[in-house]
Image (cartoon, rainbow over all chains, first blue to last red):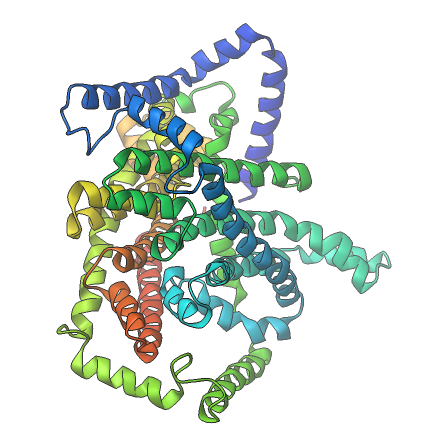
Length: 286
Length: 292
């Protein structure tokens, strides 16, 4: 563990010096050539070309696999006229609203609970089994119950996403507190810090990297789950758009939806990574 | 071929693809959770809480504060449990539903994990392979699995094929990233030592890199089976006519909430058992983990 940690730090330093050396445009290009990153571009391009060829020569019937050009036209059409009375932005917003609502609620309640569970072994003992039972449960399994309890509206979906993210966020906060080195706490105590000061200045900052990691996992799982929930019962959202398109064999809309979802998922991941880098700048540095 | 271990600054290898190097912390949480068992002195707190929850449940349902439809009481739950075990659900026994779900999980997981691991080993070993495949893996990983289920259903119809392909695509990126990380975290010193003792490329792979990566591969497999299992339950609910996921959805439609509860408990226990099985296999196979 220790070795790989210093390795990462060294790698990071190397990376920094490398970047400053090759900050010119041609330097960047050379870096790409050396790393073989140009191959990534080649692979993406060749996938697109293969897709275009498959659909252009009608290897696959065009209603089963519409070509890239058709999907692009659908994008333009949906941006202009919307899809069955909902605009694309409205669907994106509905999905993000549910996802964000459930996720933020889980963070607001789960992180304090997890911190308390890690800090106090009695609180930990009280809630640990409940959280650990929820963690491996497939989230969709209790959607049926939530629909029974709360109806098919937004509240049952937000509750589902809350229950999805909650155990992940809570256990990562707990794991974060438990991974604080005892020496650090003892050092702070022997320097005269109070309980609260130890918590605020030693334990919380040490737990933050794992809290962020947990939040990232939770957000990814929440995002997958929201689409599943929208497939089951919804009147808007990207999942609904994809599902309803399948009833009308509108494969262009399905593929467009998948691409939008993929890009959105990558953006969400990037967002939380950059938050992580901005806030937890001490990650990996002992 | 093994050029990555011969570079003058071997540690620099770790940053080849910064966006792909970020996964291990996820695994760290999984590992940390093993240390979280409650202290023996606090066991009474655990028992007291669980007892309190069960007592509250029994009281609320017995006093009729909540309707049986919303929260079945212990007696009704037990009756539903016995019923499902003896009668089965909709012309199939409970074992058949569970067996079908298990079959799909294992089918999709095995194919996805094997292909993903081979791909990940290649990606960790060779920068060009990594550069070529990483865009697809990066796109596939955050994509909600159920989104492409719809496309698979249109292409292959509702049935085993589309579900197995869905699970294959779900497990593949998780296993691939774990295997790649495993290869990359092989200590360079070990490879250099083997090389200076005269080992060839294949020998280094077979006796040094692969054994070092095996621990991460197994951790990746545990992550993958969790995701695959969750996806399968969702897939059965959306497009299925058998399996545990379909069973609870169907029971929910007929407002048989005691079956829903029993189904959730069985699904949870089966997921737990799958995870433990992989953990057991890992301990048996990778007995050298953590001893370097």
